[in-house]
Length: 432
Image 1 (cartoon, rainbow, N blue to C red):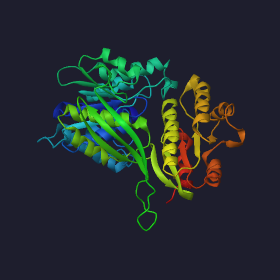
Image 2: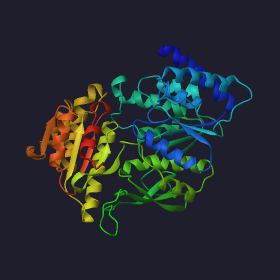
Image 3: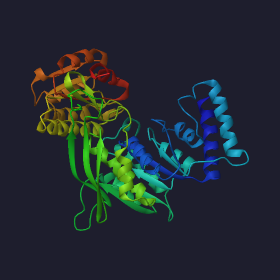
Image 4: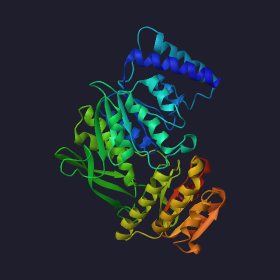
C-alpha cells in the first residue's frame, strides 16, 4: 500500500510542479535543515505567497504532500485520504487551474542512499541550500561512509543549472563548500567568519552576543516573556543591519538564519526587511528552545534529535549561555542531560566517547540516558568527578532525579535522539 501511495503522490506532485511552475527552494544537510526552512519561510512570506513542508515531513511521502497541499497529520484518517487525493487530482488535472503558491520551501531528507535523487526528480529545485554535514553525519548507519552521505546531499546542487539557479552553501563546512565544484549554476555562501582580504562568505554575522532577561515585570512578578537569546549583525557586501532574536540560543543556529538571508537577497529583499522578519521568527519545537524551568532554572530543550555535530554545538551553547547568564548575575551550574545518539552504526562508540570528552569541559553535572550514552559518561569520568556523573537506562528513570538535582539559576541542556524520548525530562522540569 505504501509503494502504491508513493507512486501516486510522485506522479501528482511532478504534474503539479510542471503545471504551476513554482520556484522550488530545496534545503538539505545533516543538521539545521528545519531551522533554515522555517527561517526562509519567515523571510519570504513577507513578500511572496509561499508554502513549506510541515514539521519533519521531509521524505518521499511528506515532500509530495507539501507540493499538493495535503496535511500529513490528517492523512492517517481514511476519509481525509480519499478527499485529499481527489483534490490533488483536480489540482493537477482539473480546469480551470487552481491558485497556487509562488514558491515552495522544501526540506529534503537523505535518510538512505537515493533519497535526495528521488526527491530532486520530483520537485526540480531551482535553489539549493546545504546547511552542514559534519564528520559523523546523522543516518550514517545506512551509508558506507560519511563521504557517501555528503555525496548523496550533493545531488541537490548537482542538478541546479541556468541563470535562475543558485546553490547556497555553508562556507564554514569544508565538505559543503566543496560542493561548489559540483554545480553548474552560481554559488552564494554564508558563514560565521568575517571575510579577510576578499576571501570568505558572501553573507556573514558579526558582533554575536548573548542576552539574558529575568522575565519579570516592574513589580517583580514572573512573566511568560522570553528569557534570553542572541543579538548580532547581518553583513552583506559593505552593509550590515542589527538583529535580535529571542530564544535563539545556539550560535550554530545562525547558519539557518544566514541561509534564509541569502535566499531573501536573491529574491530582491533588503537587509532591513530580512532582519525584521527574522526577529519575529519562532524556532521549531524541541530544537534548542530556551524555556523557563523549575527553581528559577533555564532549560535548553534540544530533544528533537541528536547527532555528534548537533550535540557538540548544543554543548557549546550550554557553556556560552551559562557564562553570559553568570556575568549578568543569573547563572548557576551547567547541567547536561544527554541521551543516546542513534543511527551511527560502526561510529557509535567513538562518537559517544568524543562527546563525553567534550561534555566534561562544558558542564558541571552530567546525566546520561541509554546504553550508548554510558560511553559518554565513561569518557567524561576521565576529566570530571564521578560524583557529578549519573547514568540511567531510560528518560522515565532519569526525569525525577533531574528534578531533584536542579537548583536556582541552573542552565539545563536536554538532548538525545528522538527514540530516547528526552522530552519527558523537559516536561518534568519546565514551568507549565
